[in-house]
Image 1 (cartoon, rainbow, N blue to C red):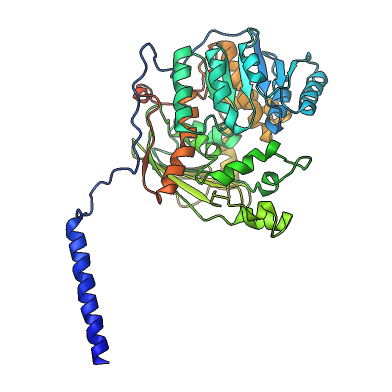
Image 2: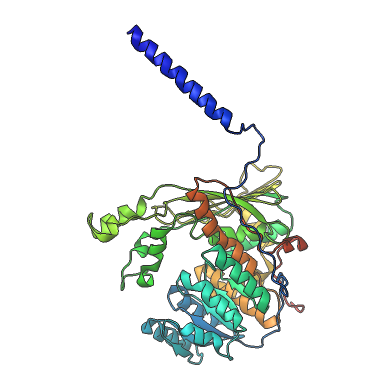
Length: 472
């Protein structure tokens, strides 16, 4: 026994010596030392002849002629909503599924609008973008085509609105920015959640100083989509060719950050007085997709035996240049109630939409306002745009009306020659989180810098502005 103990002691001394030698050969870190991000993306110089497009104004358009490319769930809704706006005219509808085109035409007819030109071929978007009777290309295809169509449309003189995400890679983000700057065309990502009624009211509260200085904000996309991801052709919620499932097979990160990020980014004046500097991102392991596939298709089915890279819950933390923090979560495979969180925490107050809608204010900030006081406050701080068009939006619908406000504002700004509420830098910044989060997840949550897509111009502004015409 004594010999065994002696051997253990010798081994322990040897291990200690090796560890000491190893430590001596490595840099010694102390509290307060700064670690460089795992990956830095230098900002490329702005090409000669380009200038930024912050608060870009283009010539007013009397009637905005729209081509809608992609007529799935989002595209069909856009056809209907735009038909309620007098200053918009849908002149083209395009989809590779003929029945979807026919359905869009039926909607136009039912709304008393003229029939649109039809396109069915996979690459017909190129011909559409080259037409000289289109002002706005409205993109509702699968994700992989959003950036290519947007870039080609701008190169052919068209303004662009694309469903989210606007881009899947940093390269695509920079291509969108440079094309918009070079062509001086509007490029908007259709982030509808910025126009929900509570989000717009809290934006107004922030801009009027109700919460003091915003210190921290949270957003999310927590939405159980398992039945839709695995829906086959003919089943409710089917994604054409099951394209969205493939993204969850191939990538792990925050694949859809915009719904939670968009409203709080505007509340924080991102690229209008502040900017996102770096992020860290971690994901849980994947459980939900495999379990669901086994239940629906069987233990030995193709879907059940595939490897799905996307972890069930991704959490991304972002630090801004002015020292604020943002938390964004993404989970579409867990049996949880829907939530975008939408939380704003400031030096003088707090607001949150999910799971409980409430506001707390100094001097009693640790208590929720009563329901009566909350309703009164939301009425007082109703956003002016909601005052203008909220009743109509509730009538038309689209996620409670926010979709209609989004489309109304897009057409309104183009019609009046005003800057759009969301610009190409919003599209690039919010979309860049997709690839940046994947890089961080792959490197065990190490920090990754967020590029400055405005190339320093973010310091020229101090707040986000939703412009109105002079006579309103």
